Length: 56
Image 1 (cartoon, rainbow, N blue to C red):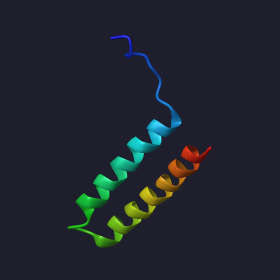
Image 2: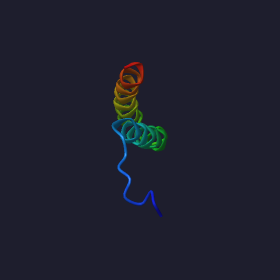
Image 3: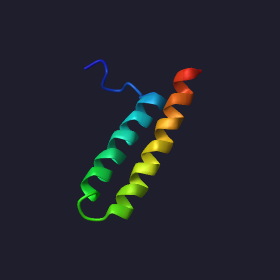
Image 4: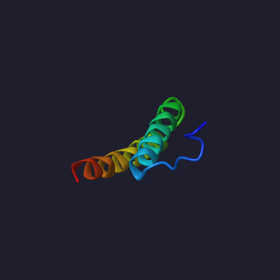
């Protein structure tokens, strides 16, 4: 109840976005490999941002 209005950090938001993109990539992998690769590349870019934030 007390965490109801807690705001998420930028790192938490990036982790959620990364997970979402990986799931979309996996779903697309059986239908359209090109779009799956694009989603995978977007997820990798977000992972790079996560790593930069964790280093600082």
